Image (cartoon, rainbow, N blue to C red; front, side, top):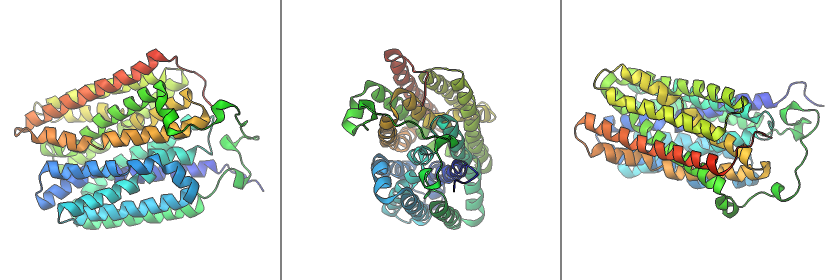
Length: 416
């Protein structure tokens, strides 16, 4: 018997929470872990930021193979296993007394996080939403932004009051319990198993036939000029963004104090929800999505440049994090939505998985790169200026990559 309520709404709600936990622990957490580890051990910033790089790099192969892992073991099993590995990794971060132990923890946390990341969100939403997928993805990715709003100050509060080890144990335990319930009660369902169809339609979507219905291999995907420009734009944009975010908390903490800096990081991710809402409204009006990506990075560049004014007045930080944060969500969610308009439905799964893998393999080096740039200068103001220049240059390259795709290929206004 067909349930009276569309189960896709439940999947969307649980995916929102999954994204909130995934990003709150695996994306916005590492910059705070880095500062906590340095405070506890006294290790140099370059060595600890290398752990952040290893965290992001270690999940790259998993992302590229997520569709295959889902097909073989199922979404519920991979989601649950990933949350456990993530929890183990974060607890190692909290207790590591040697660098190699810290790096081992970073590998675990990185592998676990990607099962709760962008590719996972797309995979979970795709069976339930087709025509309504942009709106559904926007709602699900708001969970990622909410993860920053909630977890950035929460991590700081718990670490200050109870210590990193206790904070890691509590948060990771809650995450595993939630993912266990989702895996066995929600993510193991499909529209077909419940007698429903995507978008709660009365009839299933027509099945595509012909060459475009054949999924691409990785080699075929890489040959596409559209894919290359899109993947380059996403990778460069996230390289600048993650490299900056990895050091933003410690930079702001030195000017504002730990608690205000954590709230500033939360404000940045709250701004991501606003930025994603504005982007969704513009997309419904038919704006070129690649041009929208260019605009988003232009705004982030302005916010990045504002960091040069931190020595003039600390209040500048609040304006800077709002502008930087406005593009945080779209940097992750907009490229898959661009892919949805430029590739067939059958090709999009491979395109998104490979694009996210390339992006993570690229931006994984950003924390260490920015750490080296920062450590090259003894004077804090000079170190901030160097980080700003590096971020702005890479943001400019990201804009160029997205714009190249606008020029070489007309934008399709129809979406499936």
